[in-house]
Every structure is written in structure tokens, then in C-alpha cells.
Length: 228
Image 1 (cartoon, rainbow, N blue to C red):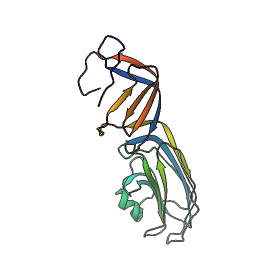
Image 2 (tube, one colour):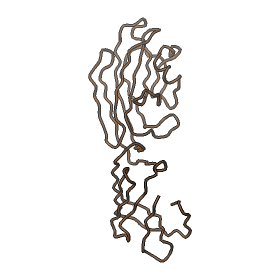
Image 3 (tube, one colour):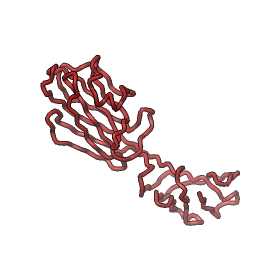
């Protein structure tokens, strides 16, 4: 990492820049973790199974590769083992999920997701799926899934009705902050022009660009090479 030097001041020419107003445009989102939230609504419809209107249901999130992320809803009592796909993917995990007893009738379900995994960490940007499974029998029941893109753009998805799933709506909203991890990159961080002139540019080659329009400097009295 290369640090720009400034002619400002007589103390060592290394400064911490505190940014109060920045414009950020990400060119690559491979390591971008955008804060966001999701809501999803679905109504289940009977397929006239062995137990008729009595049903159990699970709603969870996976990444586009099919890796389990988090359960958001589980409505099942002693028969939850018959949610075969959910059990296979989640291993029964209900961390942070809403849980309740078996349903006596079909209804509309709404879940929310704060875009975190079971450890509470924001997941990386990319494609994710919300999956729904229910059953009215001691057997695999109907399933559906809705795919969306988690990133810097809010999104609304309204899938067509299906035989056993209707009134579906997914809304993803971008949060106020984002985290960009540059620790794994060897690219040089460049701050220019030098000396500063009031509107500075900061580039990490190929990944992001910052335009700094308001900032202040704090002198560092001890500089350790290779560290900012």
C-alpha cells in the first residue's frame, strides 16, 4: 500500500483522513458487503394432502449456489422432520428464526431478513434465494423459491402465482452503510493530487474510487512503515 505525502505542516507528512462526506462508486463488488434488509410475503394453498388444511411450513435463505444461510420461519411442532428439504439444508437450525406450532389452515406468511448469516455477520453482495416449503402429509410437500440480488440497488420482485403459492412479493432495500475489505488485495491505494487542493481523489486500482469533498487531518507523530 502506497501513501500519498503532503506538504501541509511541519510534522511528519502522514495523516489520517477523516471523511465526513464521500462519494463512493464500486467498480467490482467481489468483496463488497452492503447493508440491507429484505421482506418477503407468500400465501400457501392446499394440495389436499393426508392432513388436509393442517400444514407445517419453513421459509429460509440460501445463496445462489444452494448453500444454507439462515432460517427465517418455522411453523411446525412434532412433525417438522417432514419438511425434508429444509431439514437437509438447515440441519434443523432455527437461529434468529420465528418458530411456532403446526398450522390448522393455510395463511399468508411474511418474513424479514437483515442480510446476516447465523453468526450475525452481513453476507457478501450477490444473488440469494428465499425458499418456501410446506407439507400436509408425512412426505415431501410443495416448494418454491424467489431469487434476488443483494447489492447497492433496491429491488422488488413479484413472482407469478403458482398452484400452491400465491400473492408473493419480495422487497430488498439498501441500508445506509457498506463495508469494503481491501485486506486481501495487493493493489496500491493512491491519494491525489499532492499537495491537496480541496477535492481529493482516492483510488484502489480496479475496485473503488472515492471523491473526498470534506475532511480534516490529524498528524501522526509516529509512522510505522507498511501500516496506516
